[in-house]
Length: 79
Picture 1 (cartoon, rainbow, N blue to C red):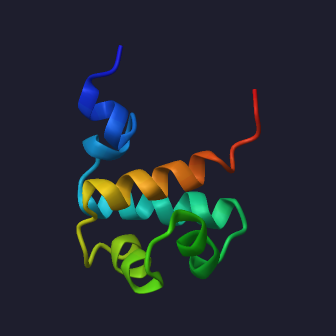
Picture 2 (cartoon, rainbow, N blue to C red):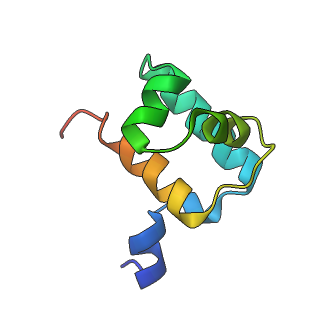
């Protein structure tokens, strides 16, 4: 059962430190065959912000984490 905060942040994103979250975003983006620009557009975040998050230079806010998590989750094939 998820907490209200997990419902906002997503199941895994809140638990990961900034650089771990960024590395996961980069890995999932590359596995999906997306460029940073494509993911940034899908998630509604600035390209520079995404680059900074992926490289651990910028700790993503909850909103940025949520947007990136949702955009990447939409790429998963349905079960």
